[in-house]
Length: 325
Image (cartoon, rainbow, N blue to C red):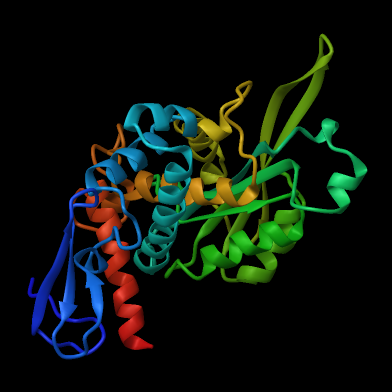
């Protein structure tokens, strides 16, 4: 690729200096006299870390490794890992927003996943809940395609109320191109969320679960499908794939693993880590039963991506947005 000045598009460039620590070269434009880095044209623009270590950090974050363990494995500072995480999260969000569109899938399952931010709800004080950043219970709403196992949408929310369910369903409605059948659990927030996002343009059913107290704890005794709107197929009113995806999240994300000290200190950190995880899950990780990635199964892409390709694709989309603006 021929390098041009990003300011005046000139090809009359001179090498100013070579940065060995960042594996990049600084150029000086002979026409406009301005300086820019060779890395400006790559997915690593704004980072001083070499590309190999950036890919290692992202790989650790999607394989269930905590922030501190990543710093030891990659031999970088904790602040560097967080900086790379937010940088990669912006890229992954752009990839999912641009690529996962016009889905032809029919059956979607929605479920929510509990975690906590900062500290558990019972340890939060009134002042902490009323003032300052969010602490306590946090919920991750996600949608799973039953056929391709693709995760097109997710929402991070401090509660299980209507705004989170509506955001999730509106985002899903923007990504599908056919009339879908949606299945959720018995959470009442989904009733209005689906109605406001789809109206009558979907088939909607709930899986109502029955619990009973056994030895001082609640145990699942059974579940029954219940059609809500449209004409949902009773055989496909299920949340099995969404619940199995919850297990994947807890297995491959240290922030969601129970009974550990790897929880998120800030809700922004949790959301950033989720963007990276779900983008990697959709485009990079081969699904065991499908023998391909969910994005390939959903015809979103025609080949298996690498972490480097995932980061570069998001950077190129940012460049296209700049040209369009």
